[in-house]
Figure (cartoon, rainbow, N blue to C red):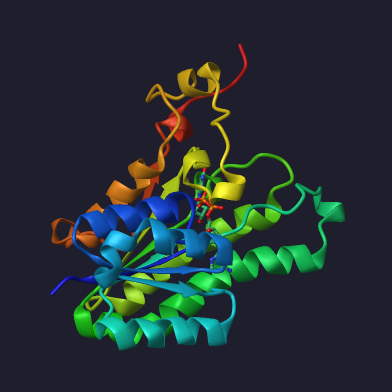
Length: 253
Ligand SMILES: NC(=O)c1ccc[n+]([C@@H]2O[C@H](COP(=O)([O-])OP(=O)(O)OC[C@H]3O[C@@H](n4cnc5c(N)ncnc54)[C@H](O)[C@@H]3O)[C@@H](O)[C@H]2O)c1
C-alpha cells in the first residue's frame, strides 16, 4: 500500500514540486491549497496520477477547512503517513514595524504558524496510527533578517520551535522535522497566470557558496529523505538548505 502524504500549499512553488516528486516516487499525495486556480491546474497536470492523487481546496488557517481536508483524505486513502506543512504567505507590504497593521501581522501568523498547528492537531491521531512523520517548512529567515520582515520572520521562528516541541510531545510515535530553505527560485512552479521568466542574475548564483540559487527540487528531495525510513533516527531537527549562505561572513572590507 502506498503511503499517503498531505502537502499543504501543494499547488504551487516548492509544494507543487514536492507533490510531483512524491507522486513520481509512488506515494499517494493530497494537495491542500487555498488557490482555486492553481488547484484546478494541478488536477489537469497530474491527471496521469489520479488514482493516487487527491486535490482539496483548503485554507489551512481555518479550523473547519482543515478538519474537512483530513476527513476527505481518510475517506479516499484510509490512512495518513506524512504531513508536509508548507503553505505560507510572505511579508505584507514590507511595512516598517511602526506601520505594520495588526490585521496583517495576524494574517501572516495565522497562515504560517497557526495553520501548521491546526494541520498537526487534526492529522496527529492518524499519524500516531501509521507511526508517521511531519515535515515543517520554515525558512533561513528564522535565523537572519532583512529590514521590515517582522511578521514573516516571527512566524518562521515559531515553526522551528513548534517542530522541536512536537517532536518531544509525539515521540516515539511520530517523527517531526523542519527544513529551512534559503533562496529557492519558484518562478517555473507558479500557476500559469503568475508564471514568468526567472529573474535570477549571475551575481545571485555566484554569491552562493554552492554556486547557484536553490531549486524547488532541492527541497523536495530533502522532504522525501526525511519521510523515508532512512531518516528513522532523526527527529526534532531543523535542516538548513540554503546553498551555504547562512555560513558566509558578509562584513564589508
Ligand atoms: N521560495 C523561497 O525562496 C522560500 C525560502 C524560504 C522558505 N520558503 C517557504 O517555503 C514554503 C513554500 O514557499 P513557495 O516559495 O513555494 O511559496 P508559493 O507562494 O510559490 O506557494 C505557496 C502555496 O501555498 C498556498 N497557500 C497560501 N496560503 C494558504 C492557506 N492559508 N491554505 C492553503 N494554502 C495556502 C498558496 O496558494 C500557494 O499555492 C513556504 O513555507 C515558504 O515560507 C520559501
